[in-house]
Image (cartoon, rainbow, N blue to C red; front, top):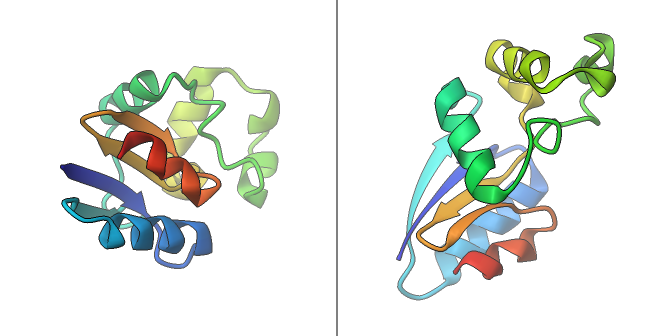
Amino acid sequence: MKAMIWHNPRCGTSRKTLAILEETPGVEVSVIEYLKTPPTREELLRLYARAGMTPRDGLRAKEPLAAEMGLLNADDATILDAMMAHPILIERPLVETDKGVKLCRPQDKVREIL
């Protein structure tokens, strides 16, 4: 099985999720450090659709920039625009397999798509 993780190596939950993926037999992991290589708007919308999420669900609301930019009460288009300009606003880790996409917070949620 192939798995793709949008990963931030500085995030403990992201590191733990990656460890689960790497320790699972038969899983071939591709890692995208999304702060260095952010997803496109279309790719992010596709991931959220597969996960049954909205951009608001994928907003890293704890990031101070989210409040500074007034995103806590913004519409989805505004949130997406902000995510494209500031990828740090994308909540992580997102993991995609053939079985679906999950925002893996907590990290054990990844097991639902393995």
